[in-house]
Length: 183
Image (tube, rainbow, N blue to C red; front, side):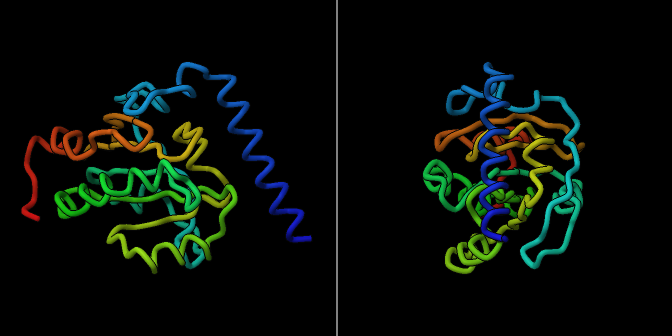
C-alpha cells in the first residue's frame, strides 16, 4: 500500500510540474541565472510548512530566521544540483555568518532517509528541510530543482535563478552590500 502511495505522490508532482510549466511558459523554460523564474523580485517571501529531517513540521520562514537567506530547491538525484553544489558551498563558507543557507529537499523520488544520508555523507554545514507536501514548491513556484531564491533581510525576494552557473557568490555579496566574512 505504501509503495503505491509513493508512486502516486511522484506521479502527482510530475503532473504538477508539467502543468505548471505549461501554465507559466516564460518562467518554466528559464535559462541558467534567469531572474524571471519563480516569484518576481520584491515579492515578500512566502511561508510554507516543511519538515526537519527528524520529521517534525516546521515553518520555512522560521528556519530562514528572519535575516538574509539563500534557499535552494534540491534533490539528491538532481545532476544540476550537484553541479551547483560548489557555488552553494562557497556562499556558505564566505557568508555563513551573515546569511542563512537552506536546502529544501523536494519530495519527488526521494525520502527523508535518502536526504539524511546525503547530509551525513557530505556535511554541508547548512540546514536541509524536507518538503513532504510540496507547500514550499508551490509557494515559491519552484517548477524544477536547482532553483535558488535569494531573500533579503527584510524578507523580500531579491532574485531567483536556476542551474549550476548562477554567480551566487557575487549575487549574495551584492545583496549584502559587498561585505564578505573572512573564510
